[in-house]
Image 1 (tube, helix red, strand yellow):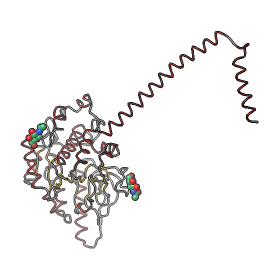
Image 2: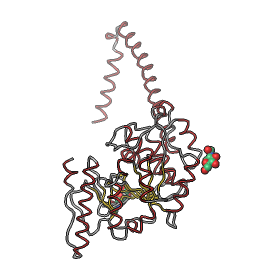
Image 3: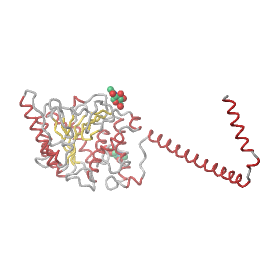
Image 4: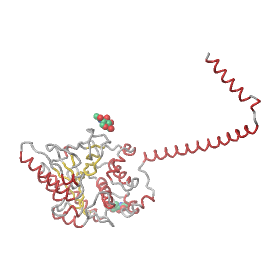
Amino acid sequence: MIITEKTAASSCSTTINSFPGLEQQPLKQMLLQLQAKFRVVKWIVLLSVLTVLLSLAVYYLASLVQPLPLPLQQMSRFSAFVPPVIAAKQRLNNTDNIEAEDRRNLARVLREAATKEKTVIVMIMNQAWAEPNSMFDVFLEGFRIGIGTERLLRHVVVVCLDDKAYTRCLEVLPRRCFFLKTTGVDFSSEKRFMVPDYLKMMWRRTEFLGSLLKLGYNFLFTDMDTIWLRDPFPRFVADADFQIACDVFFNGNHSDTSNSANGGFKFVISNRRTIDFYNYWYESRLRFPGENEQDVLNRIKDDQYVKKIGLKMRFLDMTHVGNFCQRDWDITKVCVMHGNCCIGQDNKVKDLRQMLEDWTNFVSNGNGKGGFGQPMNCRRS
Ligand SMILES: *[C@@H]1O[C@H](CO)[C@@H](O)[C@H](O)[C@H]1NC(C)=O
Ligand SMILES: *[C@@H]1O[C@H](CO)[C@@H](O)[C@H](O)[C@H]1NC(C)=O
C-alpha cells in the first residue's frame, strides 16, 4: 500500500518535469542561471562558516596554551599607569615594577615579618586611611582586643602608597612598612569606588601581590577596613592554593566558583600555579577595561586557562570572614569583619568602632550573650 503510493508520487513528479507541453525555454534558462548563482553563494557561505570555525578553534587552543597575548593598542590605553616598556621588562624579573633599592628594603621587611613558613599578612595604606583616629587605628585596635590576634601583628607588612602613609606607618609599626612607589599617580586621597585612580590602585595591588608570590612568600592579604577579632588562620585548609572571602553570599560549597569573590581578604600560597594565576589575572585587566580586579576575578575564575594550570580555589565561609553586606552575624564565630557595602571613610570608621564596642561588651559579659548591632551609618550611606 505504502510502496504503491511512493511509486505513484515519484512517477508523478517525473511526469510533470518531463511533460513536453510545460517546457518553456526562457523560464528554464532563468532557472539554470539561478541555480548557478545559488551554487556560488552556497560555496561562499560554506567557506565563511569554515573560516569562522577555524579561527574559533585556534583562539580556543591558544587560550589553553597561554594567557591571551596583549595587543599593543590595548596596552597603550594603560600607558599612564604601566608604561608598556616597564610591562614588557617586568616579565623578565622577579619583583615587578620595583626599583633595586626598594627591592632590598622589601626583602628586609618580608624577611623580618614572615612566619617560619614564609607567610606574611599584607595590607595597603594611603594617606587618607593613615591619619590618626582613622582606619589604621581602628584596624590596629581590632588586633589588640581580638582573641589571639595581637601576636599576629608582628607578621603584618604595611604597604604604603604615599609619603604621609609611610611616615605614619614608621611611627606605629617601625620595620613593618614598605613604600610602594608608582610614578605619575597620586594615591594619597580617599578613593571613591571606581574612579580611575582607584582602579589603578587596585591593579597596582594585584601586581604587587603577584610579586610577593614570585619572591616565595605566601600572603594573607587584608583590606584595612577590617577588624580582626579571632585568628583566621585555623579557617584555611592546607590543600588549597587561593582562599578568598565571599562578597554577598556563601552557598555552603567551598569549591563552588559560583560564589562571588571578595578581593579584600585572601590567603594565597606561593607556588607555580598561583604565580601563573596572578600573571593571568593582572593581564586580564586589558581584556576588561574599566573593571576592578574583583570584577575581573569573578569573570576569569572559570576560565579554561585557570583550570589548565590546576589552581585550587576555595571560598571562605561568611560566618568566619563576614562583612557589612550581611544582615546578621554570629559573634561567637566571626574572625574578621569587613566594613564594605559602605560609602565614605567616616561612616566606615564609626560603624567599625561601634562593632569593636559590641565586641568588647560581648567579651566582658563572659556569658556568650550579646551580638553586633547594624552598621547604621553605612546602611544610610
Ligand atoms: C632582576 O632583578 C635583579 C635584582 O633582584 C637584578 O639583578 C636583575 O638584573 C634583574 N633582571 C632583569 C632582567 O631586569
Ligand atoms: C561543590 O562545587 C563543586 C564545583 O562546582 C562540585 O563539583 C561539587 O560537586 C560541589 N559539592 C557539593 C557537595 O555540592
